[in-house]
Amino acid sequence: MLIILALLYFSLVSTRAAPLDIIGHLDIFRPPDLLQRDCECPPDQRTIFAIVWNCIVTITLCTWSSVHPNIPGPDEGRWKVTWRSIKLMLCGLIAPELILMWALRQWRGAQYIRQKVHELCHVNWTMTHGHFVQMGGFTLMDGDVSKGVLTAEKFQELLRAKKIDLPTISKEEIEDRSKGDGLSAILTIVQTTWFIIQVSLRLKQHLVVTHVEWLTFAVAVFNGALHFLWWQKPLNVQFPIALALRLDAPTPVQDAELVSAPHDRRDIETMELLDEPDRAMPGSEHRVYQQGSRMTKGFTKLMSFISYPAKVFSRSFDDIAAWKQVVKEEAMRVPTFYGAETGSYPRIQQWFIVLFVSVMFAFVHFLAGLSAFPTLNERIVWFSSTFAILFVPMLFWFTICQWYQEPKLIAKFSPLLVGIYILARIFLFVLGFTTLRCLPPGALDTIHWPNFILVFTGN
Image (cartoon, rainbow, N blue to C red; front, top):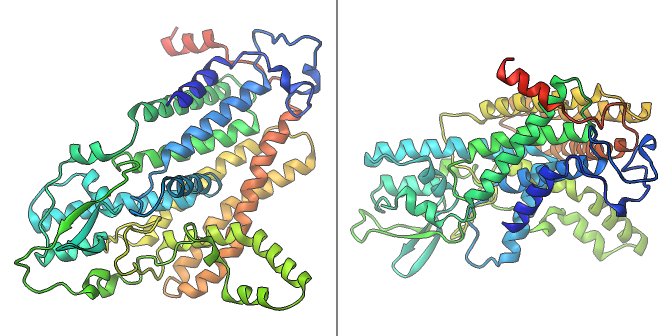
C-alpha cells in the first residue's frame, strides 16, 4: 500500500519537475532542443521523465489491480500464486482482449448462477455470490473425503439433485474473505481518471499528446472495462469453503458425477499452459532432445524459446474460448481462465463485444499514428502494427464463426495469429518510448488550467 501511495504521489507532483541527474544527456529522454546547461525546467513545460513516470505508474496500477484471479489450490505456495498474478498482468498488458473475454464470460456467468439459484431455491443471490462460485469458492466433502472443487456446473447439478444444501454465506462474509484493498482500488481509479482527464484536456487545448501517452490512454480505458466487469468479484481469496454432501441424498454420489455433466465436458479446461509451461512443447520436440546433434538440439531449444510466448498466449486463447475443456477428477481448484457456462448466451456474441472493443482499442492507436514521428520508417511500423492489432481479432472472430464446430482447425491458426499480435504490441510499446527522443514542438507544453477553469465554469 505504501508503495502504491508513493507511486501515486510522485506521479501527481512530478508533472512539472526537472529530470533527475541520473538521466544525464541521454537523447532518448531529452530532445536536442532541451539540452541545456542547467536543469531548470520552464514553468510552462513538463519533462520527459514526468511523462514516462506518469505513464508507467498508470499502466502498472491498471494492469495489476484490474485482474481478479480465481482461488488458488490448497497446495500452492505464495510464490506460485504471485507468479500467476504477474503472468496474468503481462497477459493483460500484451493481449488485453484475452482478459476482457475472460472477464466478460465471468460477468455473464455470475449473472447466470444468480438466476439458477433463484429458480432452484428461490433465494436472491448477488453477483458477488455468483463470482464466488465460479472462481472455485466451494469444495465438496463426502464425509472426511474431499471430492475436489465445485465448478459452477457441478454446483448446479448437485443443487438440482438436492445432494447439497444451498450455502447460507452472505455477501458481507464473502467480501470479508476478499483481500481486495478498497483504498488501492480508489487510488487506481483516481490515477486513471486523472490521466484520462489530462490527455483529454491536451486534445481540447490542441496540445501534442505523445505516443506513449496514447498507449497508456488505451490501456487505461481498456482496464476501465475490466474494473466494471469484475467490480463485484472478490479479490485474492485464498481458501474455499467446504460443502458437505447431504446424508439423506436421494442416491449416492459417484465420482463420475463430480467430474462434470456430459454436456459440459467440452467446456472446462484440463491443461493450463500458464501453470505448467513444459506442457507447451509438443511431444515431438521432447523426442528431438533425445537424439540428433548438439546443433540440432540447440536450434530446437532456441526455436522453442522464441515461439514459447506465442504458444502461451495461444493456449490462453484456447482456454478462454473454452474449446474442449475438461476438469480433472477431484481437482482442487478451477482453471485460471475458467468461466461458468451460460447455455443461452453463445460465445459468438461475447466475441462480437470483444471485437467491437478491439476496434476502438486499435482506433486509439490509429489516432496516435497521426502525430509526428522522428522517421518515416517508425511511422510505417506503427501503422503496420496498428492494422495488425485491428485485423487479428477480426480474423479470430471470422474463424470462430466459420468453423465453430472444428476446434482443431481453429487451433492451427491460433499460434500464427497470436504471434503476429504479440509482435505488433511489442513494436507499439517500443516505439512509444523511442519516439520520445525527438518530440514535435509543443509536446512538452503543460495544460493551461485557467482556460479549463473558465470553460468548466461557463465564463
